[in-house]
Image (tube, rainbow, N blue to C red):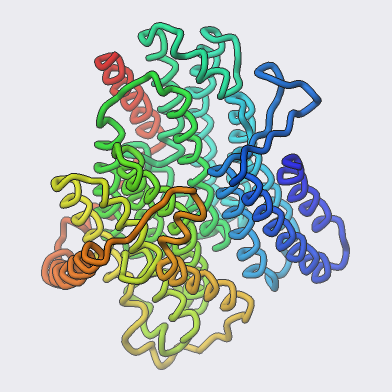
Length: 528
């Protein structure tokens, strides 16, 4: 059964490319995506009763190639199917893009493979192939900037995965197996000092794929490049990066014998702060969204590395929520930029007045990402903070204040009067429906948040009424403080204008990889 989740999207891709009746092919592809989403939900229900395993070629055990679905991987499969379904509806009327649809569904099949594989080397192969596919989609419109950004994305990720390959090779030398479960069973029998090098190598690659500080410079080039279709930016920021965080979780499970107290927690904090500073410095709406993704990844990493079940589960739920509201924001930004013929935030005004449905979807997504009461982001951030001590809770409040400031700036596009001389463009109904659906899910994920967390992750949770009202008060106070900080200081500060142009070249990205590897190696060695 599990092989279908990797093969069916690829079959859809070929079908779309060769069928001469383009509209019929796309309609059938959407039906197939809907069926795949239903199948993913059925698999999720099966995994609630136990893991589902498919041996490829009939070989069982550590020497075979195993596809395995558990609760976590089945949730991400369901999320992947749903996001690609929404993007398919969004792109339905886009003309002359059969090759785009072909690569889009190849991408989905590869991501499904990443979520299902239980083999460290197979994960490497899948990630390398998906890197090439994404690079092609970034460069799809073939303008100079997109070609440059796509090549940077490709080269940086290829270099990073060499760290991963060397780490897996060294691990195979120590254990004699590549199956994640078998490696996890063998590691406690080994000298912890011998595991320091493979752990540092593998984690350097995965942390770059997650865009953690200081390895995030490739992300805005890929996610915010002007020429990439909006659907590509949306999937990159909303979904693709979740596959890297998923691998981070799996590798941590493999290396349970390696203890690095607080290391990735500190990295997460630095990432969240850096993402805020860089996001609020931008004037391009796609770059604002791209850098804010870095900040949200930092928050997810904080929750994953707090020794508390509620915080860990809250981070998992925040990954799902981020996929919903960030996909909605990128899809709406693409429509808005096309309608206004600019991506400069200072030249876009009156979206709610001119395009009310797209404006409403943007409002719901903004409320979600800022953690406004009764939205999905509010629930996930509540659980992340519930397991933190006072100092870390205060820091998380400050990080969310940064997110609020980012989207106070971004929300300016919704209000004001549009230029009277600017033509009102008719927006495709499919694009509006897809984006609005994601916005509604942002609200539903908050109203039924606790029930969804328990249903998805089999973790009994409860929202304390007093604690939640306290969070509402903190959010309201943060909104006031954020507005005052933005209007009185940040908006006028030349410092943020200077930061706007700061970016690493390919050479400095490679240097940052080497530095991160060295710091990780020394830190891990210190604690073993």
